[in-house]
Length: 499
Image 1: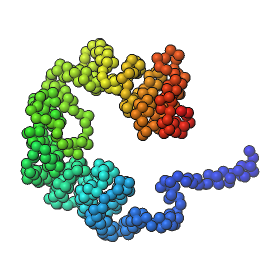
Image 2: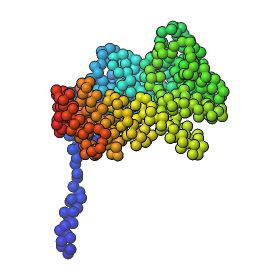
Image 3: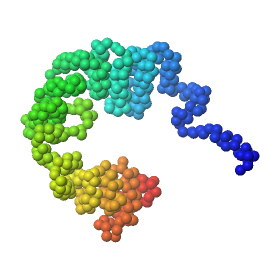
Image 4: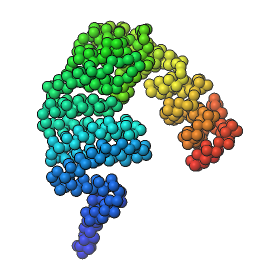
């Protein structure tokens, strides 16, 4: 290319490089490209919406500085505290967004210039949790999550505000005492460092005194406040590394409950008190007969949300290992596997065996699983182990036991099997379809229609010697029995199929 040509093409390439690319995707960076005046016009058009108008006012007050935003947020908190109108389920998410805007304005805007004012607003914000949860359907849903976030913000605000520890203790105690629905699961852990050891001790004294003043528990009487106070004391004991303090919070009459016994033993084990841990486990064993029934015990909301991965058996196994009773631990692992097909139990059992013994033991485990009832448990085991060839054999040999209602197990299993074992996958999908139509479960017609088309796609992989009917015969049988179920037919046709 000569110099003249280069000179002609250069400006064009530079102009192309300077061309700005715009995108219509609604993202913050793209909207910023529109410019301030355009965005201001759009926002003014939308400001008839009270939520948007309120948010804009907050931002303007924050930009202006001073106490304007603090006063405005305080007014909003007062207004919310005074209303007792029920919040419709359809408006919960919108209401939760409004709450979260309040929380963020406190923690991001007010806290940046006035930490003490932000902390005072946050106390008032969290105090709304108790009355607001009486106005909503789902306490643990999106509304409860906003209050939990506020609870998580507390420690940072408390440290920044540098308030006297005594004032902080009283405020934390007040929130705990009102927290009957266990919204503030993380309150103790969130505020522990700001309270410090002295504050934690003062809080423990207040909680202990309040718990003693609660009325005596009757046989069927449930005291949510007492349970909330007790859980707070448990958390304080854990933070202090005090297993005896933790145990003291559990009434002696409830220490034989397996969940409580496991929790007590776990803390004793952490403190190196193995024999005491074993004694606590023995007293709370789920395998020992009891004079009184435990089935009527009402669970605290915090217990219902607690992770359930660790059970009494888990802690007992750790205690046996810590005491050197490995043979007993192995026997318990195998017994637990035999009754539950627990994969973690089997893995830990095999890990504790000498070389080559684990191979024989695994074969025994596979044989036991092949005959395990109910069928769905056996199938889930082979899919998760994984042993897909055994899962496929199980499906074919025990197909009469397949219950199509358990689609949460059957569908993932079919997905895993469809590549190498299309016959087994087809059997599982057909079971779901047949159950859905036989019982007229209209809410499942759409997924059942999808499963029918999946069966059609697998039909070409079935051999002529397959132990099941052809896809055409299966569909013909469905039409003969359920041809008048127009809802299902419509779902099939909507997916491009024919029924």
